[in-house]
Length: 193
Ligand code: 5GP
Image (cartoon, rainbow, N blue to C red):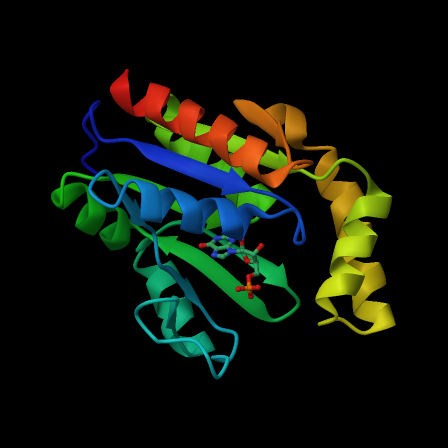
């Protein structure tokens, strides 16, 4: 991909339940002219409230495989068993062409891959919950998971926490408003560099 120094990307990675989606939405509302959200391709089925081409590009496993062969992805991962997610090079180009920095919400491995790919053009931020107990309480409150799925997410959380040191910044989501302010400052500083 033909990347220029002034073309930037900002990556948010975190275990689920840590609040990264809230951060990404907040930033997009705050800086609509400076940031564009990278819409990933994925093979999981579309949820009723989701729009194809807005939340994700929903692809069949065959179409996804073809894209891999065409080297159309910057990175892709099997985030959950049989569910593939990936960032299309064309998507990054689309947002840069609008003169905006690209905002990513990806899993932890994807975040590390993107940072490796874009180097100094990228700011990678790991969002941490204060403790596994807080995470478990938040997920229970959200009430979208079965007991088994909850345990899976908690196990994944513990595993992913080990990768925090691979990120440029680690943010702890304890007090939401305070954290959003902290993140905005980081992002603005990076964009103004
Ligand atoms: P969900 O299915 O709940 O929308 O997303 C599941 C996970 O996939 C989230 O952790 C999300 O950050 C991650 N994800 C979404 N898009 C991508 C992508 O393009 N690459 C990678 N590696 N992970 C992604």
